[in-house]
Length: 140
View 1 (tube, rainbow, N blue to C red):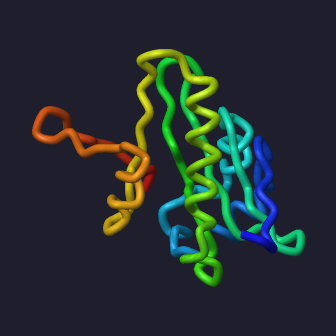
View 2: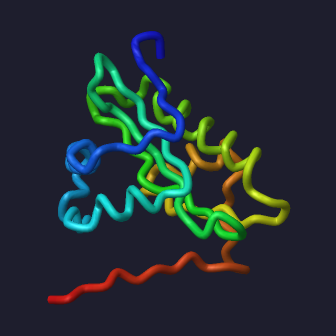
């Protein structure tokens, strides 16, 4: 991470958010028209820059009291495999350890094949006792 700058509690701009999400193929799954509101409502955010250009980000969203979700862990493909994602997760986990109350629920959805990355931070798949579920609203 020698050439990278990790900025704590710094939020990506809307353009930076679109750029990073699109770099990993999420553009068909995101409503970028409301991204600025979503970013603004984050509990905590970390961005990583190289030469003043964003190359990674991660957010904590939720109610800030009982429920917290790790969201939008993204590292631009040209910079993956260099420990940037680990630095983002470490910063998010440090924030949560220092700010989330006892018995807070910390959730996330792992992309297929990335489960082991999150297991290093003590995230577990609790099936069959619990099932992670979600719904995406479609106005088509």
